[in-house]
Length: 171
Image (cartoon, rainbow, N blue to C red):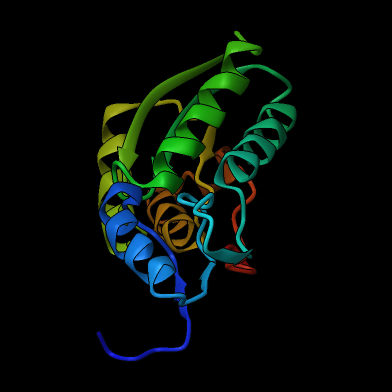
């Protein structure tokens, strides 16, 4: 409707974006996917994104390795139902299925929000006297989680999974 020459998008909800993308393709407008998820429409001319399952699996494997295959962990994921949250959670659970020495205590959705992630972590810290590791592939949330552990005097007792391209969140 606006006479655009191309659409660059990052889908949060694949089903919601599908009709608009199909209309763009039918109108001959090229689309470029930069966020993952809905990536197989014929009019998509390029996919330039991080595979959220691979990101989650790589982080989970590094966390398991750093914990020596033993311990208790919590998981902080992005907005519930998004491709990132669903794929990262599946990756974590697939890795944990092969590593029974790691117990997942709880999973929460920090919504890519540093403050919300910190608040959720403060609840974890009150609820669980022993948390050995944190699976948190999103750097914005990782910073909030780390702040909560630090303020509780427990930052030195926990191992974090590697995060995303949000570089240097724990420096």
